[in-house]
Length: 80
Length: 233
Image 1: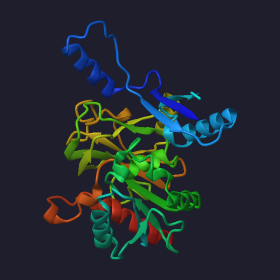
Image 2 (image 1 turned 60 degrees about the horizontal axis):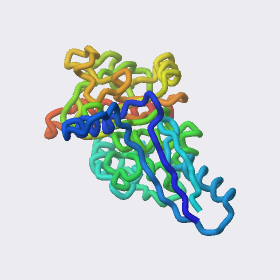
Image 3 (image 1 turned 90 degrees about the vertical axis):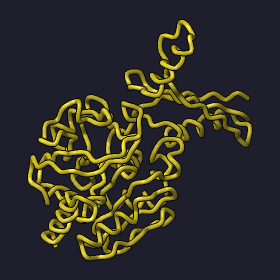
Image 4 (image 1 turned 180 degrees about the horizontal axis):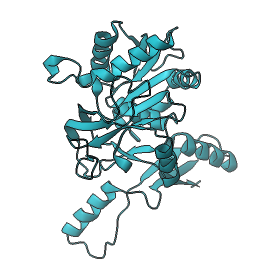
């Protein structure tokens, strides 16, 4: 089973890296970029086929390590 | 003072720290590998030194904070043991839940490596007993992620409890935006936990302890810890 955990900064948290990327996009002449927020994607392979169990394990993984919930949100998707 | 310095892969300031502790306390610190599950018996002070544990992978301090030895450190802190985290050590303490908040990328995006001035906000703690309240000391910083942030509620509580022990300031002690090198909330350079026995700070007091270093302003922190423990004994 394959899964994806996406970690993003919470609203209101200053993201200097996103700001720098935003500036670089503008200097490249890419139009219409209003703002950029940088995040992380984890592609995870899971042993076993129980989707509910997998989601619970991934949630635990995100809470305990993949995301710092003080500043980040996360989304878990089991993609099958 | 019996101190224990934690060693994680990628840490690089543990010898500076050991030298400073030996110099000021007269006792050689124990080096404790991250895979240990116990601290040496009779440890008075645990130090989490600076460096780049696990290459700053995932988030700085995140992997080290989950190492086996950190369970022992959490138990030690819960018993009231003194814990000092410097630079990456501060980041590790935040990630481990021993301190609130998080250290984000410096607001100016640059790695900052230079001397800074910090103001000692109070002298009645084990980590500041060697200084006077309001005293300005000069210490080096070397970090890319020292921009302390926490939610408003947490910041209010931290300030209300007087848990900011060190603040970035100008040479004359004035705290302003220009002296806040990394954009930290409330110019926080050093933060105490609620129980008053865990300090995290970005600057490196261990690098200003001998005249050959050009400055000895960092000695007071270690001398204060030794004095505190002597009094307690």
